[in-house]
Length: 203
Image 1 (tube, rainbow, N blue to C red):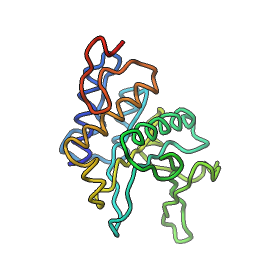
Image 2 (cartoon, rainbow, N blue to C red):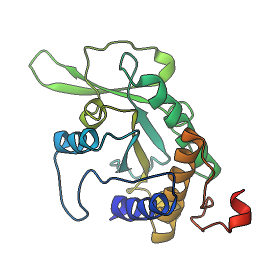
Image 3 (tube, rainbow, N blue to C red):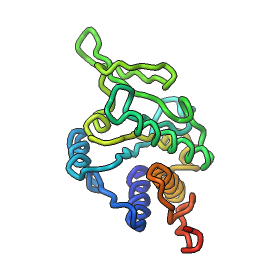
């Protein structure tokens, strides 16, 4: 519910902006595997991928925004990191606390001795360049700059009140939209609350 409300609002804003053509990597109301989502981005020849998520944690005390760009050593790392930084700036401006370094972290899946995988989260200052460890599959397979965003913790009442209601999801979508505009250098047609700007406000 959280992610689809956010994506529907973001799709609306991007579709109303002549600079963009949004492409969904899975249909609303349907599941789709990670590889299929990445394939959808590649087939669309996407210039940028944003994977929208809600976070969760058992104690209910964790809160805030974090996002995961393609890590170092990947072809699109620099541009992914740039977009992640813009997402963090926008979510901070919306009043969210930022986890990691300015809202940015790297995720790796490290193979263990028993043949399973363990997720490892690192801040950018850790300086990992270990390309042998895989990151989130949807990022690795998208073929373009890509970031996975965790907009809030659905297990935290304050987070949900701010960024998980219908209006909260629209605000997050608007902030994602503004980050996309910043990334590509275009003039936005929506403000940070998701309101359409008048023509004179766009210039």
